[in-house]
Image 1: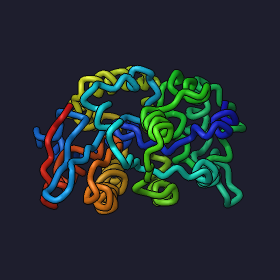
Image 2: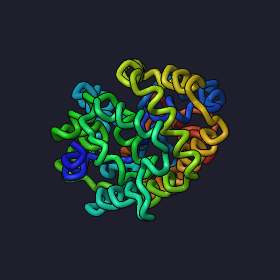
Image 3: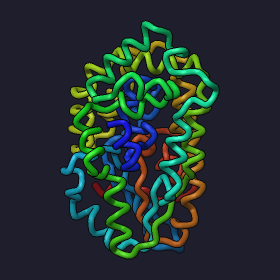
Length: 307
């Protein structure tokens, strides 16, 4: 299964809400306290001098129901000239990610985790069809690509099912739209490679401890997303149980969400100024103080919930 995931290009950095919930469930109270941005996944963004654009908060899952877009979202997508995602359509991206996940200093994963934790990882990974020899070359953070999701999700991806973001990209390309990215693969990889080894080990310990609950946690998150209830997702993230190193979690959350929010808002200005853009980024980037919608409001944009 490991080989098929790499070959299919389905390996993506684990920027999913569940990854935040089980390891980075840190200090999201400020985000959750802003009621303007915790209900709704689709927002109109406009400023005098340009036609309106839209921002869609996505979830990085392949459940087919996610592709049944409501008309309030589908029509602006069809009408948009530019469609903008977190990552560009870079054919070298999956290879860069694969390379980044592999240890290059002569050590193996079991050398870093120790025999007891590695044995726990092997047990959790068996649910995904991953043998110990497939795990040993990996950096600790790379396990999040596999262990963060329930087996059914990775099975769908291995069979070629597209996540919501991937499907939107393919639809935009099919319709001949201009498709852009706000970040590079190297920038996203750097977020994970920037973790200390101790932080990575703490992440693995938390993932293994919570792996049996992955299916139930994902079901709750998906249900909240389908209701456009980002506030419920944030409340689930804010559950600190199972987080062994809360200081490390806060540092990582800053890099994973808030620092990237600033970067993405800066880079989407080109498309928002032009107008008629459709921006699709992870829903966790939208709400709260320091979220993308808050940052856009502070720059003079009018932000209105559509769905």
